[in-house]
Length: 274
Image (cartoon, rainbow, N blue to C red):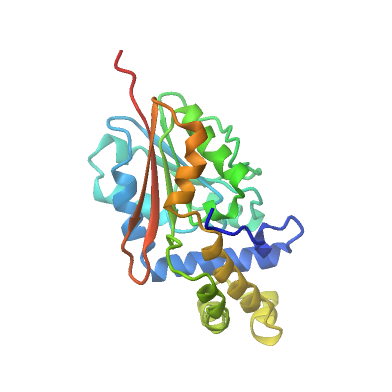
């Protein structure tokens, strides 16, 4: 495979909660700055089952990312459609932050919730209400998975016969890899800039952003490593080769973005017409 599976701080089980939350909050802000929701709204709308109330299970949600905005936009744009009007979003994470869970679940909205217990993306086992269809999403998080776990996630969606959308900000086509390491220094200063606008600005976040810059340092490392870790088109084909099924279809494509190409993967069940 082209990608390299180096570590990221937020993946480490002993990563301090304040550091993991700071990084995921910064990423959520960057999604808003780069209008990720605009792109995802179009991609996700095309995947929703026709004529069925649907629950989207977002895996590895972090601080929520762009998905709450995407789902709200779909509901608002096609409110007369039965699917959109009954569209719900269930955010999940292996390391759910209690404050994030409480903030989202205490919102007046009843169609966006955050599951309070850890959810393993390789073995999703959430109970969906009867008569509701399920769609799974992973937004800028699939690269966190080593190959064996990545393949297990794909196989799990395929086995459960549910549609799945995977989105990565970069398609990992920029050669050579050393260019990503050059980006660490600019990422460090960009981390300072993002931290200024990231909320909430807690005392510990202020301390480790602007006095002892641990957060910008980790942010710079994560930014470079994320791109090196991203599965490219050929990598996905290698992951999918052992699990190909006539009852499920995967589509891998690179699409133009504002600054770099994005990678989009669609998984769709194939109806049995026999």
